[in-house]
Length: 207
Image (cartoon, rainbow, N blue to C red):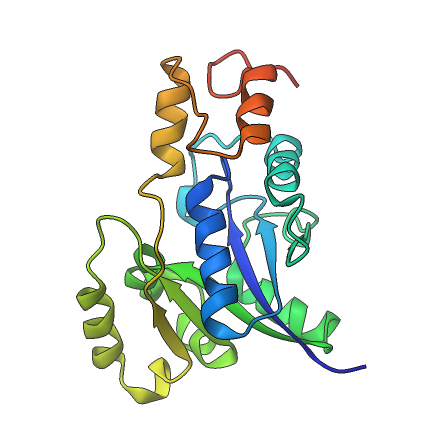
């Protein structure tokens, strides 16, 4: 059996939205990756102290959002691991557990600009291939400058991608939902229905 080219898209997905899906589809189109694996995290290290919607809801929304696209899949690897979801641990685990995968990792431009705050970031950049997608409000020139500053040893496996996207963020969506604003056309219909049914982000969530 051959090696599968996959890309890992990690995140809190609180909630998953059309921007995430557009980024994943763009990666498939531009890179030759065969599948995008959506990987919800358990406890985002950069959001310590912030309330995060229970994993059962976040994974359910991801499952609904990617249904119908055979090139999209779901992994609960980080949800099964206790403590903060450090990317370096995920990369090492996948390299050990899935030798049949040639895995790249999708991150947003905002994450690239913060990469030097990540655990073992220099090792991380050299262990895997990184696909950086543009994010609304972040100038790609800043990413190019950062890579130039890091030099070829650290930036050789980083690729910047310009992907048509949806200018939306999960933080803004949670704020809209809390105010009663409909999320239809900002998230997949099934996700909008799930959020409404379970009253997520209203302060009176139904588990």
